[in-house]
Length: 606
Ligand code: M6R
Image (tube, rainbow, N blue to C red; front, side):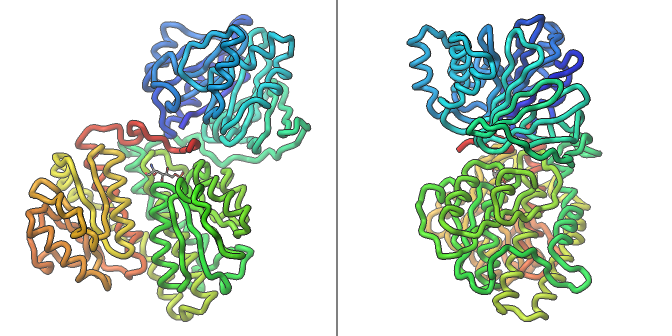
């Protein structure tokens, strides 16, 4: 999604703006630009594609202003061209924007009727002309923005600078995150604390409806009713070393390798290691009495929730309703009295997940969210925020955040089961012991990547790949397919293995690799039967299993030998080979692994 930065600096800010934008690259973008106030006039440089294009532009046409805004754009309205790239501007006003102005067409028509000439296909340009129009009516920049904000509908974060005013920047937040940073004689604006980490760790997050007037001397913040408000200044933990890939070629590789450590940290947060039992925070609801859990999320986080459905239903004997947030938010689903609703999100800013959370909150549910960004909107709007300790995830393809989400959800399932006495203390200790073994087993898998590199050579030649699994391996099959398609661009689908004969089997021939996720659990024999059906039709089977290759009774194109672990914990472990297969296939294909085309890390629009 789009990223915003702004700096009121003591000296020229162009280089720092680009550095800050680089730290937002992980969100995904297709063009970038900056604007500064130069001798009282607004100047900008923009470029299609990667930041390096903007940098070369700045080399030949530098900007010297001390006040500036910058933007990485992920196209929503209008193609990813230089013309549509932000900042957008008139002679008086320059704006960067993240989100969608839903009523931009009406605004544009009204402004065009007044003589404003639009140059782009974007919704953002309506904001620029709206503010300009208010200023032409004689309002000061601050009054003009305050007035303009009352006309905007939709979700947005804005950064605004003005010609003739070297010590003024205005920020506004409604639906999209925005952070203000405090320096010594300098002030900053960013979509998140990560962007600002090299400059400051003193951060204020604007709340819904807030707008702020920044000057070098400080900031004044106003709420949606224009009342002056104080918002807390917190110490950000975003690391300035964040852009470091260590010894890895890609962030995704680094993040896959970090999993043993970050899963350990996450589990340690929810487990009493001495007692060997789950130590789950009080969610403010009696877990013994709930009769339904509602889970919602998007993408990979949804698949984590789907694994939890199996865990909670089987272990705690509570029905779980789960749906992708983009559907659940509009389904008007009836919700139980005093139910528990769980939201899963790495970024904590996903627009659909947030909207579903709000629906459940208004309808009386107790809200628990599993988030990686503790200061995110979803965390702040929840009754209980359950952090994953994955650390910043930069690769667009989620890896360590997924397994950390699973770690928290596994502990939640055990906590509910304990409260409802559906497991004995002894069983709880066995489940916890099995969870605590997972980091060690993951280490053993990632220690030798050669089998994945070899299989990736073959996978990279495929145009379609199927993933099969049953039980908790079904969501892992879905997640494996998502991982492969998003970074290698190979078409991949995950199916419940039992569904194969109801349609997908028609796709199988000798050109179609079929990746079977099949731990030796109580459904293993059933999955083996489905595998035989694939083999009989010439499908190229890649088996991920703790069962030896020679025990499965059919020809395998490849076999990934897994350690044997408790059936409860297999999703945590079996996610890892699917990540490595996707990663190495993308490397063979030479795609942009960390920032795949068309994708954004933080999806703040619906
Ligand atoms: O930040 P979130 O966890 O809410 O994001 C949800 C999805 O957008 C995300 O998981 C997406 O599917 C990833 N690209 C998957 O790798």
